[in-house]
Image 1 (cartoon, rainbow, N blue to C red):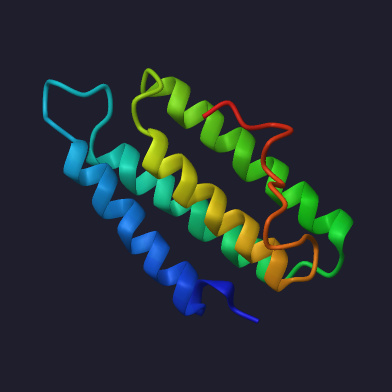
Image 2: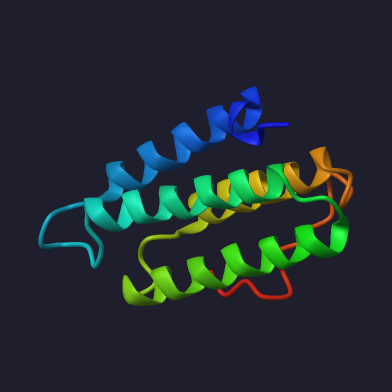
Length: 117
């Protein structure tokens, strides 16, 4: 199961990237295009790793890692990279991926224990 190919995840990922780039203003925002690319790389790596995970315990370790990595990236960007819309989209991607692996329900926020964004 390649979760990167899931239509809903793919659509949300595209919208997420577009949204971050839309708010980006050189010299005005505390993040740049490289930070956006780094965020998308983290999400794609998460999707690749959770796609091949074999159980909930392993899957939740992968969820924790992506959330903590995104916390660090957002902090580096003065908490400007992940705004409300992006927070909802990232959480949707993570929650849906876990749900498709049968690790959580569709409405269960599996990011909240570690999420600072």
